[in-house]
Length: 200
Image (cartoon, rainbow, N blue to C red; front, side, top):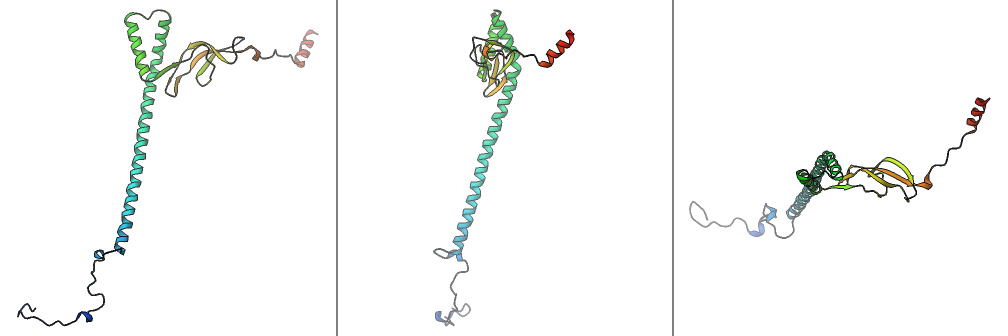
């Protein structure tokens, strides 16, 4: 229809004369069924999904590492504080052995021991324990017929550990079986000759 006169116009071209490709939309995303645009979108979506999964995995690993480092730092701090208290615990132990742990001092000492135990402090080192150089420090050494192997026969100072960490080794006297006594030293020929020269 002519917009100026209002008359119906005659068609200038028939559908058969329309050029090839006429009627195909410029936006290929409007096509139905599989298309190049859909393949590109699917590929882009897969890439973004892989990126998100990688970022999520990196975040999870980072969070685990931070939590592990935080726990390790906490254990180190607690261990350091407990190490400073070992001397006081030694004094408490000596007072208990001497029968002087009484009254208010006894209450305070027992409260301190409960707190340190709650924080994970563990006391070790008993008479008769098999000697272990990883947790024992030998201050004295002798031989005895009453032991089958290296044995802590006297505990001079108990050891303490916090978790897997040894804060202080137990200081002990160690006895070994008598059959391990070293052989009597044999005087050398040179010594004999020197003794003979002196006698002359």
